[in-house]
Amino acid sequence: MQTQGRAFLNNCVLFAQLLRRAGIPVGSDQVLELVGALEWIDLGERAQVYHTARSLLIRRHEHVRLFDALFNRFWRRLDGADRAARPTMPRAPRHRQREQPFTIVTYMAYKARLGDPEVDVVDKSGTASAAELLQRKDFSQMTPEELEQIKRLIAHMRWQISQRETRRRRANRHGKLLDLRGVVRKAAHHGGVPLQLAWQRRQVRQRPLILIADISGSMEKYARLLLQLLYSASRSLARTECFVFGTRLTRITDQLRLRNIDQAVDAAAREVADWAGGTRIGASLQAFNHSWARRVLGRGAVVLIISDGWEQGGSERLARELRQLRRRCHRLIWLNPLLGHPSYQPRAGGMQAALAEIDDFLPIHNLQSLADLATRLGTLDRRRGRR
Image (cartoon, rainbow, N blue to C red; front, top):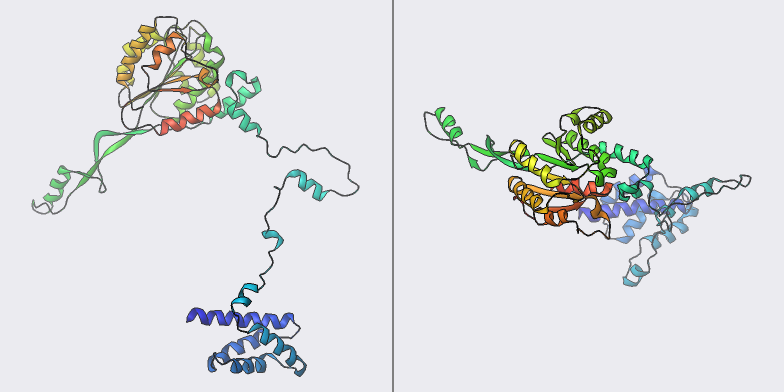
């Protein structure tokens, strides 16, 4: 009933607006008087409503005929046919959908005057932007200016890596593990009677990230960018260890801790003695397993090996060291810049030996592949080595 009464009052306001548009002066005070008077009559009686409205809204005799016509038209009873044929309000131009997107060319044509000189403007709407093209361009095909831009983008990348539950527990009222020590402590306040339970949950920590990058001669065109990548990851994640190798393994974690990125990369490059030389992946991984694995591979570490797989040593040795490395880490991921090429096939002996021992084989040839890698690291499965 309240809804019907509100609708009737809205119709009274609309009827007053109709009278004004027809030239009959109707003030707001007259509308308020009409609304107040409607409480004293029977709204179901059309004659009572008509005489009440006419007496309060019409003040000149010459307006009566026009009022009668508008009243009969506005307050008529609609049947089914009338409802279907009832005209709808036209849509305002601003509500119509734009057939073509508004472009800078459209704006200039709208603002141009007759005396303005003609200007040739290339409409680039609908084409890929320079940033989008740069995202998918191979690192090896970039110009020096594009590489400088990529270096800045990599430096500002923020990495995330999946977390793991530790064995340590901490008191938490929303936990699902019973805290027996907490129960005893609370019982001591009530004479030894355990009136309250205490709960705890396992702590959650970030997994360590280990990066081992190939800076040999076959990877020379990617080596500088790889150092930028190692610097970006080490600045974003707290527990990150960085190594590079050509013919021998070199740890550069301390050099990449410098705040200035150029100084950090230069310091790391000076530390490497076998830059752009041969490739001995198996020997380098053996040195890592022997000297560093026990120090850095604890607590569910994730290991990234960045290399094209061109091994000058024996493939059996590489497979053996990878197998040992995979047993010690949570996830072993091999990143190959050549994998981004459509015609690439892992035919090199080292790469074929590695495919059977790793968890993931991913490309790292452009900025988009780096973004995909960052997403994958943040969503790694909790189970160890699950493919």
